[in-house]
Image 1 (cartoon, one colour):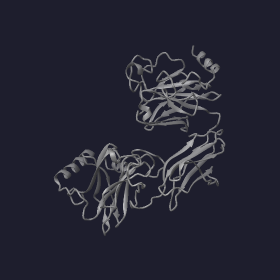
Image 2 (spheres, rainbow, N blue to C red):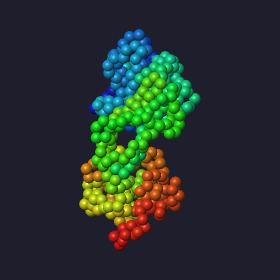
Image 3 (cartoon, rainbow, N blue to C red):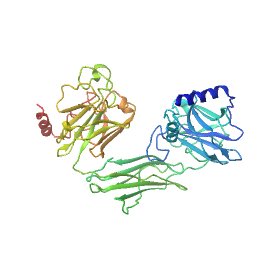
Length: 468
């Protein structure tokens, strides 16, 4: 059904009359952002697919029924979103990648989102409501117009030439902010680029530092951090600007440790001179300070040829030789039965009873597959048939037997550099590539990451002696 619908639309486009300019009704593509570097759809989660957006404006004198209007992407004119409802004169409607993905799924299409290519692409606005497919508006762009959090928009709205709105990452444009859902000449509310929490999953021994990276061409006057403990009355302190400037900077606030089991609910308010942006509520649960099992090393992209045979089975395999290593940084044993490793897509490995006890300082490694050979200690292959770690970026979670996140590491393009990402030193808070740590090897499964592990030499010796 999906294929039939797609090819039917293509056929209509081929045989219908093409009108490659703005229609008399005044409906037009007005602004779009191909390369999001932060959260644009307001869900407090920055995602390169979900946070792309395209805006349409009604610059005509009368309301328009949007039924039958579609956004198409690229030269193959793939439908990525179908409009509904009406749009009044001078009003805007913004389509985010997350909304396009949902529409595609509901209508039997592959969920590609808006899929605005960073190297250049084409976006079409068409009408199919009359039985013919008519191109109402279209725009093509080149890679020179693309920058993270840089939009391309008409000035004036609906009819003017295309210009860059790039205050956040100057590329020679207007030095104004992108304006999804508003006139391109307006002053939009402050934009939040990134929200941080350090440590990401605090224990009862940790003070938690919250950070907000935000920008506004008119400047940011104040950032407030509202939080509640166990849903009781909380506080709303003012955050401090720790780097950058009022128009583009990083704000921070540190809270005292909370008790194990406490639930922390929080959100941020970023205030500009004339408007503000408030995030959705977020939260986390404070873990016990005595539990210190952590992800310690991740290899998503094994080196080429035999040098990438990380599991030592004599064959280099791009999937089998991926691995994730965890370490017990605490002072007590931990029962791993039922714990799991997942990535952004699915559960990749569940620890069985054979991996039940992890002593203090012990390393446990899970390979994608193959036959791991010659290792000291607990070594496994992924119970789900592979780890499936994306070289271009992924998120790796370690969950306990109740499904609570114990540790998480998110990475980007550094995952595709033919070497492992490691905590340096073991159990530390800093992640880096092996080469950045000055190591002569590209990976160190079942071994300390630097020869000077945070685990004491005595403990390490005791661990090795268990498996002689």
